[in-house]
Length: 101
Image (spheres, rainbow, N blue to C red):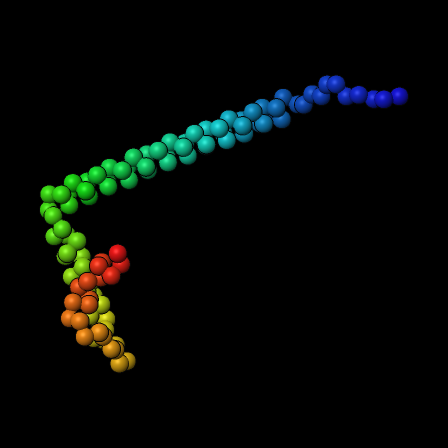
C-alpha cells in the first residue's frame, strides 16, 4: 500500500534553466571574489605610495592639511553670528591631530 516515488523527470527546458542559473551564480561569486582581491591590491598599493611620499616629503603634507583644517575652522567661526568662545591657547586650532591621539 505504500507508494514510493523513485524517479522524477523534468522537461529539458526546466533542467537547462536551472543549470544556467547555477552557472551564473558560480560565475557571479567568482567575479565578486576577483573584484575584492583587485580592490584590496589597489588599497595596498595606494597605502604604499602614500607611505613612500611621506617618507620622501616628511610630515610637510600632514602639517599643510592641519593648517588648512585650522584655516577652514577659523573661517567658519568668523562667519558665525553667534558668540564663540575659544580656549586661551593660541595653538588650539593647530593641534588638531595631537588632541585626537
